[in-house]
Amino acid sequence: MAQHSMNPKKKPIGKMMFFGVISIALYAILLVKQGLINEYVGQGGLYAVLPIMTAFIFSFFHGNFTGNFWTVLGIEAAKKKKEVK
Amino acid sequence: MHDIIRETANFIALNPGNISYLFFVGFVGGLVSGFIGSGGAFVLTPAMMSLGVPGLVAVASNMCHKFPKALIGSIKRAKYGQVDLKLGIVLGISGEAGVLYGAHIQEGIKKSFGNAGSDLYVSLSFVVILAVVGGFILLDAWKTYKSGNAQQEEEKVTKLARWVQSVRIPGTMVYFKSLNTKISILFTIPLGFMTGMLAATIAVGGFIGVPAMIYVLGAPSLMASASELVIAFVMGLGGSFKYAMSGLVDIRLAMIILAGSLFGIQLGAIGTTYVKPVIIKVVMGAIMVIVLFSRGLMVPVYMSQLGLIPALSETMAKNLTTVSSWIMTFALLTGAAIVLRSMWQGRRAEQEIAGKKAFGHGQL
Image (cartoon, rainbow over all chains, first blue to last red; front, side, top):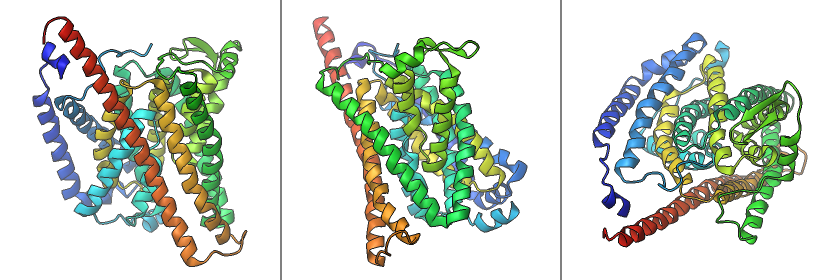
């Protein structure tokens, strides 16, 4: 990309790998231990905290991974209008 | 409550096939949501049900993937200065009340008229709301193109929004940055409530929320669609907790859909920085009008089940159902295709400009 040739930016490969590995580990645990997890989550009541916490944890690690993933691929926001107003 | 759990907590077995399917549907849904603020969810509930997931578990798991997705999308779009957090939270809280009321109405209809009655109510709501609002949005986008203003960043504030912004009710005025003025929260409460009611009925509150922010309050399209993600987060968090209390969330399904949708929502959010505001309206209006046909086809099926019209033959009912679900998938794919195409064009235009500048400076 032309703008990159003018202003070469370091790509966050390390960050992407870090969050990617944790994301994969989280998904591996979720699938390997699915019986146990479903047993607790399916009980409802105060156990409702479990799926909510899980969603927040996954979104943090996987969200950071996917964000860095597109940056590493060179797909970033348009330079000209970072602000709408 | 435990009876409900025993009845519905038959979580399905996962295999590479259904995991990939949910990941892909999640990705496309996320892409559209990142762009227009919502709109991916309506395909996910039927997609899960087609895998054998019970209806309530599908709705609950869908909601539990929606709020973390909306959170990541809104953080991303806040970085671009597109989110009006205060407006999102204010609408989201009244939306929560709308969700509860909408769910209550649904339960009442189900009790009185059974599943077919409830399905007919949902489909009719789809048809009426999507026809009116979707038609209006497309018409507005068409007018913008015709007037030659499609390339402009500034959008015209509607007469209605100008009036809403001019009303002063002491003690209720709140400043919102997306509107750059104070408006009475007495206007935002019913809008949030209706957004929540629609979310409880057809799973996509944004079909009311986004147009309401644009046409009734006067927010720019980009800020409206970004702030809708905040509303979706607030409503989704409350709703997920309610369903999780009854043990209805299949966290595996929610997280697998989330895996795909977080890739999609980041891409959709990036896409908004490349397009003119009118494209948001085009994508939203196009999806709404296509989905309208999908749901419209189902109306005679449910009506015949309720005995309101003569019974349809089994083949006819089956064909209508199949065509309807294909049209719904087509709606989402059309939205995704417009997003990707506009983004591709925007990126190419930006690269050309950057290339010319570099050439001008003698750097290439």
